[in-house]
Image (cartoon, rainbow, N blue to C red; front, side, top):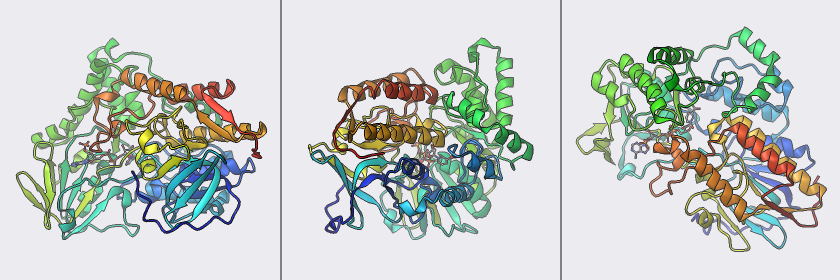
Length: 552
Ligand code: N01
Protein backbone atom coordinates (compact mmCIF):
# COMPACT_ATOMS: atom_id res chain seq x y z
CA UNK A 1 0.00 0.00 0.00
CA UNK A 2 1.54 3.36 -0.94
CA UNK A 3 2.19 5.48 2.12
CA UNK A 4 1.21 9.09 1.63
CA UNK A 5 1.23 9.88 5.33
CA UNK A 6 4.59 11.67 5.21
CA UNK A 7 3.49 14.20 2.64
CA UNK A 8 3.21 17.82 3.83
CA UNK A 9 -0.22 18.96 4.99
CA UNK A 10 -2.35 19.62 1.91
CA UNK A 11 -3.02 23.20 0.90
CA UNK A 12 -6.67 23.92 0.33
CA UNK A 13 -7.55 24.21 -3.32
CA UNK A 14 -8.42 27.77 -4.19
CA UNK A 15 -9.46 27.24 -7.77
CA UNK A 16 -12.51 25.68 -9.38
CA UNK A 17 -12.14 21.99 -10.10
CA UNK A 18 -10.73 20.86 -13.38
CA UNK A 19 -12.92 18.95 -15.74
CA UNK A 20 -10.16 16.40 -16.20
CA UNK A 21 -6.93 15.77 -14.31
CA UNK A 22 -4.44 13.72 -16.28
CA UNK A 23 -1.68 11.76 -14.59
CA UNK A 24 1.32 11.70 -16.89
CA UNK A 25 2.81 13.94 -19.56
CA UNK A 26 3.91 11.31 -22.05
CA UNK A 27 2.43 10.47 -25.42
CA UNK A 28 -0.93 9.55 -23.83
CA UNK A 29 -1.23 12.54 -21.49
CA UNK A 30 -0.32 14.99 -24.25
CA UNK A 31 -2.84 13.61 -26.70
CA UNK A 32 -5.51 13.65 -23.98
CA UNK A 33 -4.87 17.36 -23.41
CA UNK A 34 -5.23 18.08 -27.10
CA UNK A 35 -8.33 15.95 -27.62
CA UNK A 36 -10.22 17.06 -24.52
CA UNK A 37 -9.49 20.72 -25.00
CA UNK A 38 -11.35 20.45 -28.28
CA UNK A 39 -14.46 19.59 -26.24
CA UNK A 40 -13.99 22.82 -24.31
CA UNK A 41 -12.90 20.96 -21.18
CA UNK A 42 -10.54 22.40 -18.60
CA UNK A 43 -7.69 19.90 -18.35
CA UNK A 44 -4.28 19.69 -16.73
CA UNK A 45 -1.63 16.98 -16.81
CA UNK A 46 0.71 16.29 -13.90
CA UNK A 47 4.10 14.89 -14.84
CA UNK A 48 6.74 13.60 -12.41
CA UNK A 49 9.61 14.33 -14.81
CA UNK A 50 11.20 17.69 -15.39
CA UNK A 51 10.22 17.38 -19.05
CA UNK A 52 7.44 15.88 -21.14
CA UNK A 53 7.78 12.63 -23.07
CA UNK A 54 7.26 9.86 -20.50
CA UNK A 55 9.17 6.75 -21.47
CA UNK A 56 11.18 8.72 -24.06
CA UNK A 57 12.14 11.27 -21.41
CA UNK A 58 13.48 8.71 -18.95
CA UNK A 59 15.01 5.95 -21.09
CA UNK A 60 18.15 7.66 -22.40
CA UNK A 61 20.51 4.71 -22.30
CA UNK A 62 22.87 4.18 -25.24
CA UNK A 63 21.08 2.65 -28.19
CA UNK A 64 17.55 3.42 -26.97
CA UNK A 65 15.29 3.45 -29.97
CA UNK A 66 11.80 2.35 -30.93
CA UNK A 67 11.20 -1.15 -32.28
CA UNK A 68 8.27 -0.04 -34.42
CA UNK A 69 9.06 1.90 -37.59
CA UNK A 70 8.76 5.65 -37.12
CA UNK A 71 6.38 6.22 -40.02
CA UNK A 72 4.00 4.01 -38.03
CA UNK A 73 5.05 4.97 -34.48
CA UNK A 74 3.77 8.54 -34.58
CA UNK A 75 0.53 10.40 -33.97
CA UNK A 76 -2.11 10.16 -36.67
CA UNK A 77 -4.52 12.79 -35.34
CA UNK A 78 -3.15 15.59 -37.50
CA UNK A 79 -2.40 15.02 -41.17
CA UNK A 80 -0.36 18.25 -41.27
CA UNK A 81 1.81 16.90 -38.46
CA UNK A 82 2.42 13.53 -40.06
CA UNK A 83 3.17 15.17 -43.40
CA UNK A 84 5.61 17.77 -42.10
CA UNK A 85 7.66 15.70 -39.65
CA UNK A 86 10.72 14.05 -41.15
CA UNK A 87 12.08 10.91 -39.55
CA UNK A 88 15.75 10.54 -40.38
CA UNK A 89 15.89 6.76 -39.84
CA UNK A 90 13.67 3.70 -40.21
CA UNK A 91 13.48 3.32 -36.41
CA UNK A 92 13.53 6.52 -34.37
CA UNK A 93 16.21 7.00 -31.72
CA UNK A 94 15.25 8.16 -28.24
CA UNK A 95 16.55 11.74 -28.85
CA UNK A 96 14.69 11.93 -32.16
CA UNK A 97 11.41 10.71 -30.66
CA UNK A 98 11.75 13.09 -27.71
CA UNK A 99 12.38 15.93 -30.19
CA UNK A 100 9.20 14.90 -32.04
CA UNK A 101 7.16 14.88 -28.81
CA UNK A 102 8.44 18.33 -27.91
CA UNK A 103 7.61 19.55 -31.40
CA UNK A 104 4.04 18.23 -31.01
CA UNK A 105 3.71 19.97 -27.64
CA UNK A 106 4.79 23.28 -29.14
CA UNK A 107 2.83 22.94 -32.36
CA UNK A 108 -0.43 22.30 -30.48
CA UNK A 109 0.38 24.58 -27.55
CA UNK A 110 0.12 21.76 -25.02
CA UNK A 111 2.73 22.87 -22.48
CA UNK A 112 0.52 25.41 -20.75
CA UNK A 113 -1.58 22.53 -19.43
CA UNK A 114 1.30 20.38 -18.19
CA UNK A 115 2.67 20.78 -14.69
CA UNK A 116 6.15 19.26 -14.57
CA UNK A 117 8.11 17.99 -11.55
CA UNK A 118 4.87 16.92 -9.95
CA UNK A 119 4.14 13.40 -8.87
CA UNK A 120 0.58 12.43 -7.94
CA UNK A 121 0.72 10.55 -4.65
CA UNK A 122 -2.94 10.00 -3.88
CA UNK A 123 -6.33 10.20 -5.57
CA UNK A 124 -9.68 9.91 -3.80
CA UNK A 125 -13.13 9.88 -5.34
CA UNK A 126 -15.94 11.44 -3.37
CA UNK A 127 -19.19 9.68 -4.14
CA UNK A 128 -21.30 12.53 -2.76
CA UNK A 129 -19.85 15.13 -5.15
CA UNK A 130 -18.69 12.83 -7.95
CA UNK A 131 -15.30 14.49 -7.81
CA UNK A 132 -11.72 13.28 -7.62
CA UNK A 133 -9.25 14.93 -5.25
CA UNK A 134 -5.62 14.36 -6.15
CA UNK A 135 -2.67 15.14 -3.90
CA UNK A 136 0.75 15.90 -5.32
CA UNK A 137 4.16 15.28 -3.77
CA UNK A 138 4.34 19.04 -3.12
CA UNK A 139 1.24 18.92 -0.96
CA UNK A 140 -0.90 20.57 -3.60
CA UNK A 141 -4.52 19.48 -3.83
CA UNK A 142 -6.23 19.23 -7.21
CA UNK A 143 -9.95 18.65 -7.71
CA UNK A 144 -11.31 17.23 -10.92
CA UNK A 145 -14.54 15.73 -12.16
CA UNK A 146 -12.72 13.05 -14.11
CA UNK A 147 -9.30 11.56 -13.82
CA UNK A 148 -7.25 9.95 -16.61
CA UNK A 149 -4.41 7.70 -15.59
CA UNK A 150 -1.86 8.03 -18.40
CA UNK A 151 1.08 7.08 -16.22
CA UNK A 152 2.63 4.49 -18.52
CA UNK A 153 3.09 0.75 -18.42
CA UNK A 154 6.85 0.60 -18.20
CA UNK A 155 7.42 3.65 -16.04
CA UNK A 156 8.25 2.14 -12.66
CA UNK A 157 11.90 1.08 -12.94
CA UNK A 158 12.90 -1.87 -10.87
CA UNK A 159 16.32 -2.59 -9.40
CA UNK A 160 16.31 -6.10 -7.90
CA UNK A 161 16.61 -6.27 -4.19
CA UNK A 162 20.25 -7.42 -4.23
CA UNK A 163 22.06 -7.53 -0.92
CA UNK A 164 24.86 -4.99 -0.59
CA UNK A 165 23.87 -2.60 -3.36
CA UNK A 166 24.71 0.37 -1.15
CA UNK A 167 28.26 -0.84 -0.64
CA UNK A 168 29.29 -0.69 -4.31
CA UNK A 169 32.15 1.79 -4.72
CA UNK A 170 31.60 2.34 -8.44
CA UNK A 171 28.61 3.94 -10.11
CA UNK A 172 25.39 2.21 -10.99
CA UNK A 173 22.56 3.10 -13.34
CA UNK A 174 19.11 1.86 -14.34
CA UNK A 175 18.10 1.93 -18.02
CA UNK A 176 14.87 3.72 -17.16
CA UNK A 177 16.48 6.44 -15.04
CA UNK A 178 19.41 7.32 -17.25
CA UNK A 179 21.41 10.50 -16.46
CA UNK A 180 20.58 13.31 -18.87
CA UNK A 181 24.23 14.18 -19.35
CA UNK A 182 24.92 10.63 -20.59
CA UNK A 183 27.51 8.22 -19.26
CA UNK A 184 31.00 7.75 -20.64
CA UNK A 185 32.11 4.14 -20.13
CA UNK A 186 35.45 4.61 -21.88
CA UNK A 187 38.14 2.54 -20.25
CA UNK A 188 35.80 1.14 -17.59
CA UNK A 189 34.99 -2.39 -16.50
CA UNK A 190 31.23 -2.51 -16.89
CA UNK A 191 28.59 -5.06 -15.90
CA UNK A 192 25.14 -5.09 -17.51
CA UNK A 193 22.50 -7.08 -15.63
CA UNK A 194 19.48 -8.01 -17.78
CA UNK A 195 19.03 -9.01 -21.41
CA UNK A 196 15.54 -7.75 -22.30
CA UNK A 197 14.95 -5.07 -24.96
CA UNK A 198 16.90 -2.44 -23.00
CA UNK A 199 19.93 -4.67 -22.38
CA UNK A 200 19.94 -5.93 -25.97
CA UNK A 201 19.97 -2.36 -27.31
CA UNK A 202 22.65 -0.98 -25.02
CA UNK A 203 25.09 -3.92 -24.89
CA UNK A 204 26.59 -3.44 -28.40
CA UNK A 205 27.23 0.26 -27.74
CA UNK A 206 28.60 -0.11 -24.23
CA UNK A 207 30.88 -2.90 -25.49
CA UNK A 208 32.41 -0.46 -27.98
CA UNK A 209 33.30 2.00 -25.22
CA UNK A 210 34.11 -0.11 -22.21
CA UNK A 211 37.46 -1.66 -21.47
CA UNK A 212 35.61 -4.81 -20.51
CA UNK A 213 31.95 -5.79 -20.41
CA UNK A 214 30.37 -8.59 -18.41
CA UNK A 215 26.78 -9.35 -19.37
CA UNK A 216 24.86 -11.08 -16.59
CA UNK A 217 22.11 -13.09 -18.27
CA UNK A 218 19.39 -14.93 -16.35
CA UNK A 219 17.15 -15.69 -19.34
CA UNK A 220 18.14 -15.64 -22.97
CA UNK A 221 15.76 -13.60 -25.11
CA UNK A 222 15.07 -13.91 -28.79
CA UNK A 223 16.27 -10.92 -30.75
CA UNK A 224 15.88 -10.22 -34.44
CA UNK A 225 17.90 -7.84 -36.58
CA UNK A 226 16.24 -4.41 -36.80
CA UNK A 227 17.92 -3.61 -40.13
CA UNK A 228 17.78 0.03 -39.22
CA UNK A 229 18.80 2.39 -42.00
CA UNK A 230 18.47 6.02 -43.02
CA UNK A 231 14.97 6.84 -44.25
CA UNK A 232 14.73 6.41 -48.01
CA UNK A 233 13.19 9.50 -49.56
CA UNK A 234 11.04 7.59 -52.02
CA UNK A 235 9.72 5.31 -49.28
CA UNK A 236 8.83 8.30 -47.11
CA UNK A 237 7.14 10.09 -50.00
CA UNK A 238 5.05 7.06 -50.88
CA UNK A 239 4.08 6.41 -47.28
CA UNK A 240 3.07 10.01 -46.70
CA UNK A 241 1.02 10.12 -49.88
CA UNK A 242 -0.99 7.15 -48.60
CA UNK A 243 -0.99 8.04 -44.91
CA UNK A 244 -4.75 8.13 -44.15
CA UNK A 245 -5.39 4.83 -45.94
CA UNK A 246 -2.34 3.26 -44.29
CA UNK A 247 -3.51 4.33 -40.83
CA UNK A 248 -6.95 2.90 -41.48
CA UNK A 249 -5.44 -0.35 -42.70
CA UNK A 250 -3.27 -0.51 -39.56
CA UNK A 251 -6.39 -0.30 -37.39
CA UNK A 252 -7.60 -3.47 -39.07
CA UNK A 253 -4.64 -5.49 -37.88
CA UNK A 254 -3.95 -7.17 -34.51
CA UNK A 255 -0.87 -5.04 -33.82
CA UNK A 256 -2.22 -1.76 -35.26
CA UNK A 257 0.75 -1.76 -37.58
CA UNK A 258 0.19 -1.64 -41.30
CA UNK A 259 2.31 -2.70 -44.22
CA UNK A 260 2.65 -6.40 -43.44
CA UNK A 261 0.49 -8.80 -45.44
CA UNK A 262 -1.63 -11.03 -43.23
CA UNK A 263 -0.36 -14.59 -43.25
CA UNK A 264 -2.63 -17.16 -44.84
CA UNK A 265 -0.92 -20.49 -44.12
CA UNK A 266 0.05 -22.56 -41.13
CA UNK A 267 3.76 -23.14 -40.65
CA UNK A 268 2.95 -26.83 -40.69
CA UNK A 269 1.31 -26.74 -44.10
CA UNK A 270 4.54 -26.14 -45.98
CA UNK A 271 7.79 -28.03 -46.43
CA UNK A 272 10.79 -27.38 -44.20
CA UNK A 273 12.62 -25.88 -47.17
CA UNK A 274 9.82 -23.47 -47.96
CA UNK A 275 9.52 -22.51 -44.30
CA UNK A 276 13.19 -21.81 -43.86
CA UNK A 277 13.27 -19.73 -47.04
CA UNK A 278 10.34 -17.68 -45.69
CA UNK A 279 12.01 -17.18 -42.29
CA UNK A 280 15.26 -16.23 -44.01
CA UNK A 281 13.48 -13.57 -46.08
CA UNK A 282 11.89 -12.16 -42.92
CA UNK A 283 15.21 -12.27 -41.06
CA UNK A 284 16.80 -10.27 -43.87
CA UNK A 285 13.90 -7.80 -43.95
CA UNK A 286 14.17 -7.18 -40.19
CA UNK A 287 11.52 -6.28 -37.64
CA UNK A 288 9.52 -8.41 -35.28
CA UNK A 289 6.01 -8.16 -36.77
CA UNK A 290 7.29 -9.31 -40.12
CA UNK A 291 8.83 -12.46 -38.62
CA UNK A 292 5.86 -13.36 -36.41
CA UNK A 293 3.56 -12.77 -39.37
CA UNK A 294 5.27 -15.42 -41.51
CA UNK A 295 2.53 -17.94 -40.68
CA UNK A 296 -0.91 -17.81 -39.10
CA UNK A 297 -0.14 -20.02 -36.12
CA UNK A 298 3.24 -19.00 -34.73
CA UNK A 299 1.70 -17.62 -31.54
CA UNK A 300 -0.94 -20.29 -31.04
CA UNK A 301 0.59 -23.62 -32.00
CA UNK A 302 3.71 -24.84 -30.19
CA UNK A 303 4.76 -27.15 -33.00
CA UNK A 304 4.48 -24.32 -35.52
CA UNK A 305 6.32 -21.97 -33.20
CA UNK A 306 9.12 -24.50 -32.69
CA UNK A 307 10.04 -24.13 -36.36
CA UNK A 308 10.41 -20.34 -36.06
CA UNK A 309 12.19 -20.61 -32.69
CA UNK A 310 14.67 -23.16 -34.01
CA UNK A 311 15.39 -21.06 -37.10
CA UNK A 312 16.24 -18.10 -34.85
CA UNK A 313 18.36 -20.30 -32.54
CA UNK A 314 20.31 -21.54 -35.54
CA UNK A 315 20.94 -17.96 -36.62
CA UNK A 316 22.42 -17.25 -33.18
CA UNK A 317 24.57 -20.37 -33.45
CA UNK A 318 25.75 -19.16 -36.84
CA UNK A 319 26.73 -15.70 -35.60
CA UNK A 320 28.30 -16.36 -32.19
CA UNK A 321 31.67 -18.08 -32.58
CA UNK A 322 32.12 -19.48 -29.08
CA UNK A 323 29.90 -22.57 -28.95
CA UNK A 324 29.13 -22.38 -25.24
CA UNK A 325 28.21 -18.68 -25.43
CA UNK A 326 26.03 -19.33 -28.48
CA UNK A 327 24.12 -22.09 -26.66
CA UNK A 328 23.60 -19.81 -23.64
CA UNK A 329 22.28 -17.06 -25.89
CA UNK A 330 19.90 -19.39 -27.74
CA UNK A 331 16.58 -19.23 -25.82
CA UNK A 332 15.07 -22.59 -24.97
CA UNK A 333 12.64 -21.83 -22.18
CA UNK A 334 9.96 -19.96 -24.11
CA UNK A 335 8.46 -19.96 -27.62
CA UNK A 336 9.62 -17.09 -29.81
CA UNK A 337 7.37 -14.05 -29.53
CA UNK A 338 5.84 -14.97 -26.16
CA UNK A 339 8.22 -12.63 -24.36
CA UNK A 340 8.57 -9.25 -25.97
CA UNK A 341 10.69 -9.94 -29.02
CA UNK A 342 13.80 -7.73 -29.08
CA UNK A 343 15.16 -5.94 -32.12
CA UNK A 344 18.86 -5.30 -32.26
CA UNK A 345 21.78 -4.00 -34.19
CA UNK A 346 24.77 -6.31 -33.84
CA UNK A 347 23.68 -7.81 -30.52
CA UNK A 348 24.87 -11.37 -31.12
CA UNK A 349 27.96 -10.18 -33.01
CA UNK A 350 28.99 -8.29 -29.87
CA UNK A 351 29.73 -11.60 -28.12
CA UNK A 352 32.53 -12.22 -30.65
CA UNK A 353 34.46 -9.28 -29.20
CA UNK A 354 37.45 -10.00 -26.98
CA UNK A 355 36.26 -7.56 -24.30
CA UNK A 356 32.79 -9.11 -23.80
CA UNK A 357 31.95 -12.09 -21.59
CA UNK A 358 28.50 -13.59 -21.01
CA UNK A 359 27.91 -14.76 -17.45
CA UNK A 360 25.10 -17.27 -16.94
CA UNK A 361 23.38 -16.18 -13.74
CA UNK A 362 20.66 -18.78 -14.20
CA UNK A 363 23.02 -21.60 -13.24
CA UNK A 364 25.09 -19.41 -10.90
CA UNK A 365 22.80 -16.64 -9.56
CA UNK A 366 23.95 -13.27 -8.32
CA UNK A 367 24.35 -13.47 -4.56
CA UNK A 368 25.15 -9.87 -3.78
CA UNK A 369 26.60 -6.60 -4.94
CA UNK A 370 29.89 -6.03 -3.16
CA UNK A 371 32.01 -2.90 -2.91
CA UNK A 372 34.03 -4.20 -5.85
CA UNK A 373 31.28 -5.47 -8.14
CA UNK A 374 28.97 -8.46 -8.56
CA UNK A 375 29.38 -11.70 -6.67
CA UNK A 376 27.71 -14.87 -7.91
CA UNK A 377 27.89 -18.20 -6.05
CA UNK A 378 31.18 -19.03 -7.75
CA UNK A 379 32.95 -15.79 -8.52
CA UNK A 380 33.32 -12.09 -7.78
CA UNK A 381 33.38 -9.84 -10.87
CA UNK A 382 35.25 -6.57 -10.31
CA UNK A 383 33.51 -3.66 -11.97
CA UNK A 384 33.71 0.14 -12.19
CA UNK A 385 30.07 0.53 -13.26
CA UNK A 386 26.93 -1.59 -13.09
CA UNK A 387 23.97 -1.07 -15.39
CA UNK A 388 20.64 -2.51 -14.32
CA UNK A 389 18.63 -3.31 -17.44
CA UNK A 390 16.32 -5.20 -15.13
CA UNK A 391 13.00 -3.84 -16.30
CA UNK A 392 9.94 -2.37 -14.68
CA UNK A 393 7.01 -3.14 -12.42
CA UNK A 394 5.01 -3.32 -15.62
CA UNK A 395 1.41 -2.34 -16.28
CA UNK A 396 0.27 -1.96 -12.68
CA UNK A 397 3.38 -0.43 -11.04
CA UNK A 398 2.58 3.21 -11.75
CA UNK A 399 -0.98 2.96 -10.42
CA UNK A 400 0.08 0.89 -7.41
CA UNK A 401 2.36 3.77 -6.42
CA UNK A 402 -0.63 6.10 -6.14
CA UNK A 403 -2.96 5.67 -3.18
CA UNK A 404 -6.21 5.40 -5.14
CA UNK A 405 -9.43 5.04 -3.15
CA UNK A 406 -13.04 6.19 -2.90
CA UNK A 407 -15.21 7.60 -0.14
CA UNK A 408 -17.18 4.35 -0.33
CA UNK A 409 -14.19 2.46 1.00
CA UNK A 410 -12.81 0.98 -2.21
CA UNK A 411 -9.00 0.86 -2.38
CA UNK A 412 -7.43 0.08 -5.76
CA UNK A 413 -4.50 -1.82 -4.21
CA UNK A 414 -7.03 -4.14 -2.52
CA UNK A 415 -9.29 -4.40 -5.57
CA UNK A 416 -6.26 -5.50 -7.60
CA UNK A 417 -4.70 -7.68 -4.92
CA UNK A 418 -5.15 -10.84 -6.99
CA UNK A 419 -4.22 -9.08 -10.24
CA UNK A 420 -5.61 -6.09 -12.15
CA UNK A 421 -9.32 -5.96 -12.98
CA UNK A 422 -10.65 -3.61 -15.64
CA UNK A 423 -13.45 -3.39 -18.15
CA UNK A 424 -11.98 -3.00 -21.65
CA UNK A 425 -8.76 -1.90 -19.97
CA UNK A 426 -10.40 1.52 -19.75
CA UNK A 427 -12.16 1.66 -16.39
CA UNK A 428 -12.29 -0.14 -13.05
CA UNK A 429 -15.49 -1.07 -11.24
CA UNK A 430 -16.04 0.82 -7.94
CA UNK A 431 -13.76 3.64 -9.21
CA UNK A 432 -16.13 5.95 -11.10
CA UNK A 433 -14.87 8.65 -13.44
CA UNK A 434 -11.33 7.22 -13.53
CA UNK A 435 -10.03 6.15 -16.93
CA UNK A 436 -6.86 4.23 -17.68
CA UNK A 437 -4.93 4.54 -20.94
CA UNK A 438 -3.35 1.35 -22.35
CA UNK A 439 -3.32 -0.38 -18.98
CA UNK A 440 -4.09 -3.98 -18.03
CA UNK A 441 -6.88 -5.51 -20.09
CA UNK A 442 -6.05 -3.26 -23.03
CA UNK A 443 -4.14 -4.46 -26.09
CA UNK A 444 -1.88 -1.36 -25.81
CA UNK A 445 1.50 -2.93 -25.06
CA UNK A 446 0.98 -5.53 -27.78
CA UNK A 447 0.33 -2.91 -30.45
CA UNK A 448 1.77 0.21 -32.00
CA UNK A 449 1.34 2.08 -28.77
CA UNK A 450 0.42 5.49 -30.20
CA UNK A 451 -2.45 3.97 -32.20
CA UNK A 452 -3.82 2.44 -28.99
CA UNK A 453 -3.33 5.70 -27.11
CA UNK A 454 -5.29 7.62 -29.72
CA UNK A 455 -8.05 5.01 -29.83
CA UNK A 456 -8.38 4.93 -26.01
CA UNK A 457 -8.33 8.70 -25.61
CA UNK A 458 -10.85 9.14 -28.42
CA UNK A 459 -13.12 6.62 -26.71
CA UNK A 460 -12.79 8.49 -23.41
CA UNK A 461 -13.43 11.84 -25.10
CA UNK A 462 -16.57 10.48 -26.78
CA UNK A 463 -17.77 9.13 -23.42
CA UNK A 464 -17.25 12.51 -21.73
CA UNK A 465 -19.03 14.27 -24.55
CA UNK A 466 -21.92 11.83 -24.24
CA UNK A 467 -22.14 12.39 -20.48
CA UNK A 468 -22.14 16.14 -20.97
CA UNK A 469 -24.85 16.05 -23.60
CA UNK A 470 -27.09 14.00 -21.35
CA UNK A 471 -26.53 16.06 -18.22
CA UNK A 472 -24.72 13.16 -16.56
CA UNK A 473 -21.55 13.30 -14.51
CA UNK A 474 -20.71 9.79 -13.48
CA UNK A 475 -19.62 6.67 -15.37
CA UNK A 476 -18.45 3.36 -14.01
CA UNK A 477 -18.34 -0.20 -15.25
CA UNK A 478 -20.44 -2.86 -13.58
CA UNK A 479 -18.55 -5.52 -11.62
CA UNK A 480 -20.14 -8.10 -13.91
CA UNK A 481 -18.90 -6.42 -17.10
CA UNK A 482 -15.46 -6.15 -15.53
CA UNK A 483 -15.43 -9.83 -14.51
CA UNK A 484 -16.56 -10.89 -17.98
CA UNK A 485 -13.88 -8.80 -19.67
CA UNK A 486 -11.13 -10.14 -17.38
CA UNK A 487 -12.42 -13.65 -18.09
CA UNK A 488 -12.29 -12.94 -21.83
CA UNK A 489 -8.75 -11.49 -21.60
CA UNK A 490 -7.61 -14.64 -19.79
CA UNK A 491 -9.45 -16.99 -22.15
CA UNK A 492 -7.86 -15.33 -25.18
CA UNK A 493 -4.41 -15.46 -23.58
CA UNK A 494 -4.93 -19.13 -22.72
CA UNK A 495 -5.71 -19.90 -26.34
CA UNK A 496 -2.23 -18.66 -27.29
CA UNK A 497 1.32 -19.59 -26.33
CA UNK A 498 1.90 -16.34 -24.40
CA UNK A 499 1.28 -17.80 -20.92
CA UNK A 500 4.15 -20.26 -21.49
CA UNK A 501 6.71 -17.50 -20.92
CA UNK A 502 7.80 -15.94 -17.65
CA UNK A 503 7.44 -12.39 -18.88
CA UNK A 504 6.46 -9.01 -17.51
CA UNK A 505 3.13 -9.64 -19.28
CA UNK A 506 2.37 -11.98 -16.36
CA UNK A 507 4.33 -10.02 -13.75
CA UNK A 508 6.94 -12.78 -13.51
CA UNK A 509 9.83 -10.35 -13.11
CA UNK A 510 8.48 -8.95 -9.83
CA UNK A 511 8.80 -11.35 -6.90
CA UNK A 512 5.41 -11.81 -5.22
CA UNK A 513 3.37 -10.18 -8.00
CA UNK A 514 0.24 -12.26 -8.77
CA UNK A 515 0.73 -14.24 -11.95
CA UNK A 516 -2.01 -12.91 -14.17
CA UNK A 517 -1.81 -12.32 -17.90
CA UNK A 518 -2.36 -8.55 -18.15
CA UNK A 519 -2.49 -7.41 -21.79
CA UNK A 520 -5.37 -8.24 -24.13
CA UNK A 521 -3.90 -10.33 -26.93
CA UNK A 522 -7.06 -10.69 -29.00
CA UNK A 523 -5.76 -7.99 -31.32
CA UNK A 524 -6.26 -4.27 -31.73
CA UNK A 525 -8.78 -4.82 -34.56
CA UNK A 526 -11.02 -7.01 -32.41
CA UNK A 527 -10.64 -4.75 -29.41
CA UNK A 528 -11.52 -1.57 -31.28
CA UNK A 529 -14.60 -3.25 -32.72
CA UNK A 530 -15.69 -4.26 -29.21
CA UNK A 531 -15.20 -0.72 -27.89
CA UNK A 532 -17.22 0.69 -30.80
CA UNK A 533 -20.01 -1.84 -30.15
CA UNK A 534 -20.09 -0.88 -26.47
CA UNK A 535 -20.49 2.78 -27.40
CA UNK A 536 -23.11 2.07 -30.05
CA UNK A 537 -25.01 -0.08 -27.56
CA UNK A 538 -25.39 2.89 -25.20
CA UNK A 539 -22.29 2.16 -23.10
CA UNK A 540 -23.14 -1.46 -22.50
CA UNK A 541 -21.60 -2.69 -19.24
CA UNK A 542 -21.28 0.84 -17.84
CA UNK A 543 -23.60 2.67 -15.49
CA UNK A 544 -24.03 6.33 -16.37
CA UNK A 545 -25.67 8.58 -13.81
CA UNK A 546 -25.78 12.03 -12.24
CA UNK A 547 -27.70 15.13 -13.04
CA UNK A 548 -25.48 18.17 -12.79
CA UNK A 549 -22.91 17.90 -15.56
CA UNK A 550 -22.01 20.93 -17.62
CA UNK A 551 -19.49 19.13 -19.77
CA UNK A 552 -19.25 20.02 -23.44
O1 N01 B 1 13.07 -5.13 -19.21
P1 N01 B 1 12.71 -6.69 -19.27
P2 N01 B 1 13.55 -4.15 -20.38
N1 N01 B 1 18.92 -11.14 -11.77
O2 N01 B 1 11.81 -6.92 -18.11
C1 N01 B 1 16.62 -9.51 -16.02
C2 N01 B 1 9.95 -2.05 -23.62
N2 N01 B 1 11.16 -1.58 -24.26
O3 N01 B 1 13.77 -2.81 -19.79
O4 N01 B 1 13.95 -12.64 -18.02
C3 N01 B 1 19.29 -11.25 -13.06
O5 N01 B 1 12.27 -7.08 -20.60
C4 N01 B 1 15.50 -10.27 -16.65
O6 N01 B 1 15.72 -11.64 -16.58
P3 N01 B 1 14.43 -12.66 -16.59
C5 N01 B 1 9.60 -3.41 -24.20
O7 N01 B 1 8.21 -3.57 -24.18
C6 N01 B 1 11.07 -1.33 -25.59
O8 N01 B 1 14.63 -4.72 -21.15
O9 N01 B 1 13.41 -12.06 -15.65
N3 N01 B 1 18.59 -10.75 -14.08
C7 N01 B 1 15.55 -9.70 -18.06
O10 N01 B 1 16.58 -10.27 -18.82
C8 N01 B 1 10.28 -4.32 -23.20
O11 N01 B 1 9.78 -5.62 -23.20
C9 N01 B 1 12.19 -0.94 -26.25
O12 N01 B 1 14.99 -13.93 -16.12
C10 N01 B 1 17.45 -10.11 -13.78
C11 N01 B 1 15.90 -8.23 -17.79
O13 N01 B 1 16.50 -8.19 -16.50
C12 N01 B 1 10.04 -3.58 -21.90
O14 N01 B 1 10.20 -2.22 -22.24
C13 N01 B 1 13.39 -0.81 -25.61
C14 N01 B 1 17.01 -9.94 -12.46
C15 N01 B 1 14.70 -7.34 -17.78
O15 N01 B 1 14.11 -7.38 -19.03
C16 N01 B 1 10.99 -3.92 -20.79
O16 N01 B 1 12.30 -4.09 -21.32
C17 N01 B 1 13.45 -1.06 -24.26
C18 N01 B 1 17.79 -10.49 -11.44
N4 N01 B 1 17.42 -10.40 -10.15
C19 N01 B 1 12.33 -1.44 -23.59
N5 N01 B 1 15.85 -9.25 -12.49
C20 N01 B 1 12.06 -0.70 -27.69
O17 N01 B 1 11.15 -0.09 -28.19
C21 N01 B 1 15.58 -9.01 -13.78
N6 N01 B 1 16.55 -9.53 -14.57
C22 N01 B 1 13.06 -1.28 -28.53
